[in-house]
Image (spheres, rainbow, N blue to C red):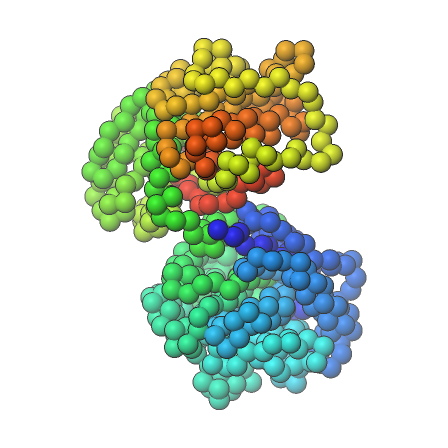
Length: 543
């Protein structure tokens, strides 16, 4: 499956907000949360907003930026882009691109507190972010007019609740479809509105001020009475189930100092949207998760009212071996079974923890756990790659690669378990090696890398036993040898073993916050497949 490409546009000059310059940091923050290839757009953030021309503040700057975004998009061959803004004006070229591809069979859903339907003569501020949708409809300054334009029939306003008089007049005169926040409580209503346009694909514009400021106020122009973050994700998910996504824009994020709770809301929202953008085959998700259960066996476990509860005595860190895994049926009756799940863990002196994944249809369960006060921790990305790609991946250019002695043992050995325990270097590493890794019953390859002088540099474990997937585990590099090609050598060796076993694909799990590891795996050929996270009962810091 082709991965979306992130187009990062740190544009702020189209905003009327007194703190508009924060939009540049907001664009970078949003782009960094998305696990896809990134194309940055040149922006001179040190320059001023520019002069007001034809009633638009910064017209010349914005026109130059439009050209830069077009140039960036011209380098993208993938069909779907995610635009990380910046003010809403960054959407001109991406929507233009989607229109060129889909024509009048494209619908644009405009999630926004504001309609952005002003023209220079009606705008109270002269800021272009309040005119961008009208420009996409063919009205506005010539310098900011798209080469392909929408018609009012192609637009659906979603969550708009602050319209200027001229905007309201336009909406009523052209009968623009509009759904209120209340109507969006049922995502099916939005799907029906888009279907009524006759669309074959949908572009989703998401101005973060569509969210209720009680949840997220890191925007320039917050408006009360907005959407809850999970409801917004539900709406986009419902659209993606019915229509191909032609693109997505996430705009108007203004990071605020000390707003850690809002940063967490954005992180969660982007994670949910990521799983909408990349939709792996359900059979692959199920197969990987079942394989992972066997590849990382917990010493104690039992089926419990639709759940699989797992426990690894002596291991304190948050890992799958100490969490409850809800089978698909657990999503329907989670609250009834939760007391038994909680009792299983509290009886063992652990904070109850649940592993949930949107890809496994745990969305309703996740919302219920959040409502019950279970906190979210440790978002994990599952990445996949063809074994052939990883086996032949070139080392990253410019790295001070060493000369390594690479050993691949067909099966677990005491020497490899000792090496892994040494490198892992945590209080429960020996427990992990003895109680979990040593119990893996699947065919495995254990890779060890040593420097020329014999010092241990890295380890990795590759678990087979499936006709389609081999799992990558126990990837550890000694700090003294990082960024020198050790992990890449482990991956190439393990991928070659998988090919010898006639296994075409590899998967691995990596923390969303481990940016260095994610970059390494991306260079090796891995791409994002889906994600999961944990919900824990009780205050932060307990486990």
